[in-house]
Length: 158
Ligand SMILES: [Zn+2]
Ligand SMILES: [Zn+2]
Image (cartoon, rainbow, N blue to C red; front, side, top):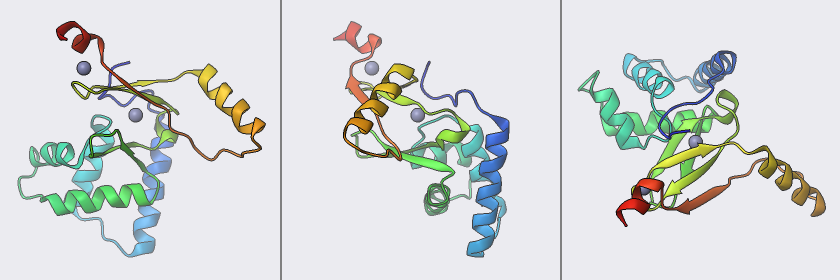
């Protein structure tokens, strides 16, 4: 699996996320402006693990008038209502991807040389984590599994 693509998108789950966002915005009295809709659509259709700057560049390709603050606030909104997950991979940047229920639960391999992010799913790791949690009497609500190293391309140029 290559980073930068939303994988295995489940259209029913996407509809649920959109529904959750709409009711959250209604509850907060937030209007669905054209700019906000464009940012949200671009996020839903765009690559995974986008930073605020990445998303800003994408939306500016479609509407030059959109500012950093609007993109920032919209991403925060998506994260607040659980539509987007915020991830940090040690470079000081926040990256955003659609919540797990729209993709499938996955973990990450991060190249510390070029920043490439690869997603993987490994049932054996999930199972082991569950066993460890049980052993320690924990009820797990979420987990993050991140591996840092160098990708094949960067090993070649080293
Ligand atoms: Zn690399
Ligand atoms: Zn991911």
